Image (cartoon, rainbow, N blue to C red; front, side):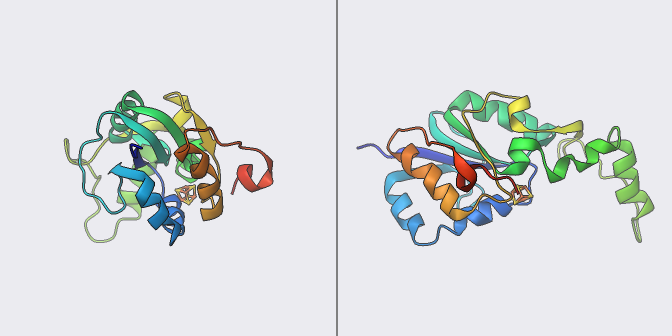
Length: 182
Ligand code: SF4
């Protein structure tokens, strides 16, 4: 049987969801026998999101132009896309800046008013991506196939979601164990 082409993506999140993924510990060895990891910030250095990905877990909200460009490509190239963790599902912590309208007040507060020795705005076209006016959850920008909430989702919840996917089945996302936020 062909291995599943599996990817994970890190947008505007703290990487805690990926850390929880690593908490799968020895089950990762079982997983490695069933999937080809074709793109991930964990354990790979592949720069370009590939074509024909079967399953992708997306961590984080969409906060800047790089996030936006990547998620559009990910959607186009992925059969089953999982909104992975509360930042992807609701925009969560990164969206706290949405309470302050626009990006200028946030950037000025962080980098000028609270800057220490050389306060300056982080601008470098082509290197530092521009922030979007608002941080948005993934499903507001593209269609997602499944929501996997949690901040982060526990390793057991991740495993319970992955096991059916490995068999080509859609996980049943019901009950507190699978759906609780936070
Ligand atoms: S959902 Fe929680 S653990 Fe995951 S990226 Fe967001 S803040 Fe971090």
